Length: 329
Image (cartoon, rainbow, N blue to C red; front, side, top):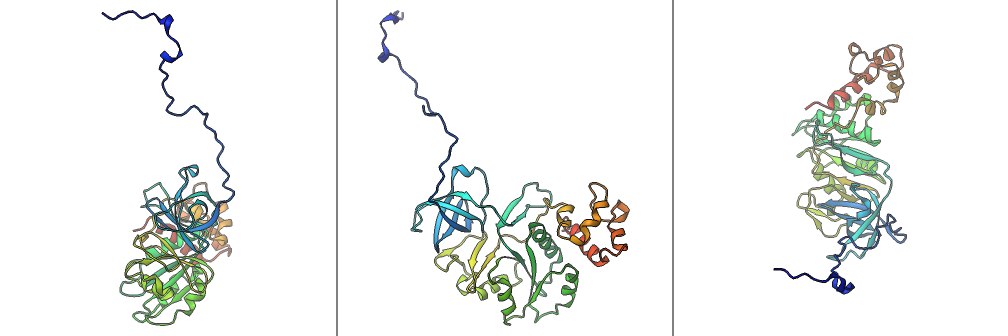
């Protein structure tokens, strides 16, 4: 039988106090200011680790807890603290993310409600398409144009293998959209492409086999895209297939995106795309709410806007073709 104990004889040392697993200090919402953080640009992203270029030194970093779930993409301007030497097995922390000027997004497919940021702060999207072997994929080109226009970026068409097929039909298809186009022959000069990329942040996309890696290697010989990716400044190797920003010899950056071969556009609405067509935007003000702007039979008033001479029928047709491309295969 258990013996009764006289609790009156207990003192403070006899009482077992359970430790507070969360600590006794009240949690503060105040976060460090990191006033001495260094500024840099994210040049690669790979499984939760970020390569940040800080004063021409590649620093491996992780995202600080205070950033929460905020995504970080290639091209982002960030502030980092910690070990900034770039030495092997060192790790810094990204503590601030600067406001973005542009954001290139896509969804996994057209039914996916979740957007994924591919690249931040890019000026233009260079759509690399072959004129033959393989033939141009107009569906992909159209989708890339939609992605660029709705992101506030300028789309640029780069047509390769002009020695195998003439570019006339492809150029005519995009003439009404005023998309700049560069035509390249195999082994031919790249002066026009160099001029277009100089001092710009450019994203290159394209299907396999269109010659995008060949272009990257010609623009940045040390990139060696066929056998592996060197670092953003020509030192070391990256074997990841994710996006990487490569510094151009004449100034500017080329962002190669080997993993991005199509764009799901579930996040793009008709009004999002209409913003990129100022000659049609005012005419859409008389359309019924929720108008998809696809046809007069569905109530769209843009046909009347064209009939009144405020825009051309070719521009309206091109706009509607891009609208349809959002859900086309």
